[in-house]
Length: 327
Image (cartoon, rainbow, N blue to C red; front, side, top):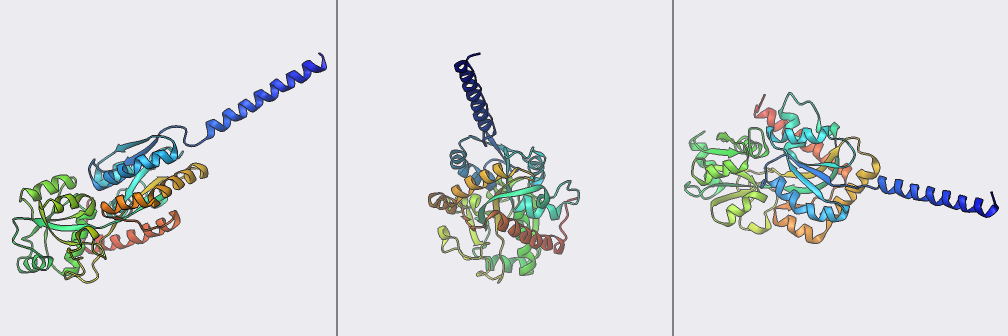
């Protein structure tokens, strides 16, 4: 074999190796396909609305499409477990919430998983309070009047919730405990049917996340009494907080954020965290989130995990003190 032919062969081998190397690097790039986001609650609920608001921008950051999958049932446990059991490769995220990561682990005794152990925080979207409102036909116009009516006739006033032990239930249970009143709880399978019955006059009151409550309030379909946040909501500046309206120290703020199955490799996890954080921190997105009643808390993943742990301990005490059980 001549020297020139040997050199040519070496060049071909080198080119082939370089091509293989480039192909391997391309195959390892994340993400190389669609990323799934599991929303463990029905369409049009707060978790679904927030996920869809963020999804297009996150998709652009990742350079791949996002597939939103509503896996509902059991107060969010079915969808949460689906995320926990998913392959930890970065291609599945969960839109988690106070219900899935703080309340359910304390409420259900037959959990086969623990979100604190089996999920990894990706990014906290923010905190969102609720609006306590009543049907327009109820002769109550302020929270003080509502509380006084409840004290005069214990158990007469009814309130709906998205399910026994959920956030909309516990925020009212906390109100009962702190205001020393007794109401009658009517659980539903989701916010939509509870709201429908309130609008039809079948129940008296609800505590509904601002994200889904605001359109009803602004349309005049219900009468808002107070917000559950520490500060007033900018879009409803005349509406007092529960603390201002007669229950000092009351606060009920939920959170929403992205989680991934525990064990996702460092590079995909870092990519997901960076993309989500950039989108959430964008000022224009911040304004859109605020319109939905969401306040960005600016916590990194480690701080997010600590926040969830503290929130879980708080609602665990509320559940035990109110003797709320589901199984």
